[in-house]
Image 1 (cartoon, rainbow, N blue to C red):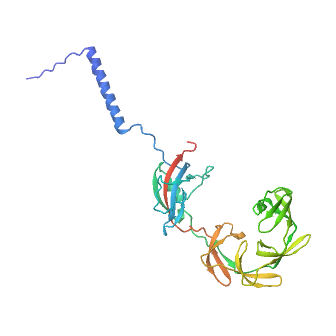
Image 2 (spheres, helix red, strand yellow):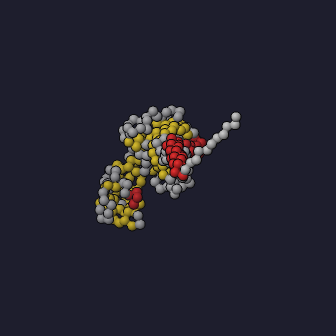
Image 3 (spheres, one colour):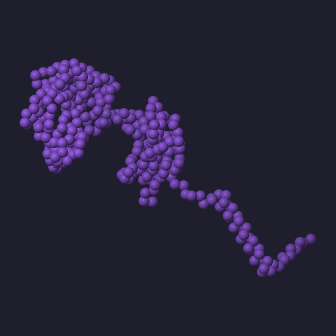
Length: 323
């Protein structure tokens, strides 16, 4: 038997209801999809080259575990196990990531750390190993210096009663208001009168004290004579005595008629301040690596050269400059 299907007539009013119902179902379906899969979440901001990023971190030497640096403030004892949580106060470091010129108030940090920051979000934390080639580099043999151990310094020195000193030097070695006509204390010396201040040069008059021992570039000297024009000073120590001068530490070996022979007095592992004019590129302080009768060898390389440094870093904020 052949089946015959009949189409029931639909009037206009029913048709409108059917269309309206279909549209409602579509709206509900689409809305459900949006609700389930994409709730208009806020855009996730990640670090890109050129961004200004504030970070907190703890860093340490991988080999020894010794702390290098941290942004945690206060007297908290910090180790590599310390958490970057809300129990601490911080001074976040601002970094311009992978930019040729850091933005004002920011720095460029180690290349290895900057690479690790790329793609991180605010609040994200990561532990990063930075090897020497992406960190502090490797030691430079040109920054290892040998200092002659035997030196000769003058036994006598003259200081003019009227003298001129650069202002930026003068303000560091006096106590009192620096003003023309004032008398101020020349630290470790005596009072001086300020005669004039011109072109960043201070002209002074000394008021020396007989027999007073004062600190000089070469060590302690005693006032032995005062005239209207000059102050005569003599090295004040005896043979065998140790002393600290402005740029070296030594022991008196021999006192000659016009000079004093001294011997640098350092031990292996001791820290030495860099005062060598030919070593301007060297680190501010060095470490003694060898001592002989002829010389003292000092390594002025930055201590972290050749070291792998580990950073536990957390992103505090991200600023998109110009975007």
